[in-house]
Image (tube, rainbow, N blue to C red):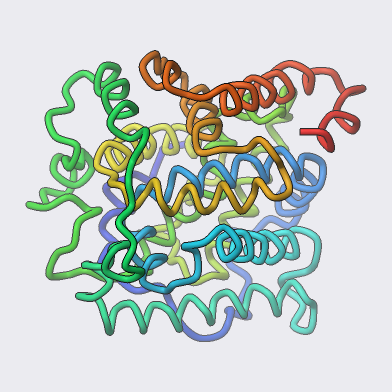
Length: 356
């Protein structure tokens, strides 16, 4: 199969809004019911493992200004309580799509995906109407709080050591070398469009990309290719129903090998650079998210999440590791042992997950 989806294609949708209106009644010609059901079964089989991958993707994705600034401006995620509520509601919606029937009009899953699509349209109109205010939104300007950073500078020093050729933390390899833009994709410009086709495509990556890249790091040690293909097809369908045009759909290629390669490229050429360009606002909002989750998972910290993320993508972080407190280091080691060692053994899967 010829690989058709590229980062260059996806970034072309940065000034094109997500489609509005009702979820389409038409089933796309590429839809495969067996693969779709395989994807749903895969989610039900590895629900907790997938939830961890999506949580860490959101944690890292907050370094994208395209996600961070709207969240700051909307005032829905700046405290642990608010961040936990928002994350929990998102998880409930997505889980309902994987359990129910998104094609049946009165099914709760269909109603859920319609609600999410409508909310995307609502907030797209708000953010684009107030785009200049969103562009300039900071934790200080919106909340009157001056955030401080304990870890970012050290993290960036380690990343640069492992990233030959990075000259500036604001440089976006995708847009300068592929798209020819004079500014990075993740910076405001005159054609700024929030909740664009590109934004939604990268959101798809957030829900499945890390897992597709490193399933074993999330406790899925013996995945069947058919299951992974089904998982990708399922997210291709969800993207279509949420208003992503096929040409920008992250899962366009619809197979594990090509989508996995695209995920690696996205992390290497986009996410690495947004982490390098992140500010105290990122640490503030990411910490609120983690502290919210820590209410149900005591021991979870910004440090432990960061270290596990870096371990997943095989980044050696010696400076950062040396400044982590015992609590963060202990929880990181616990997560690594459970997901990367214990979950290799099927007899351990049910008993250990509830104790992470």
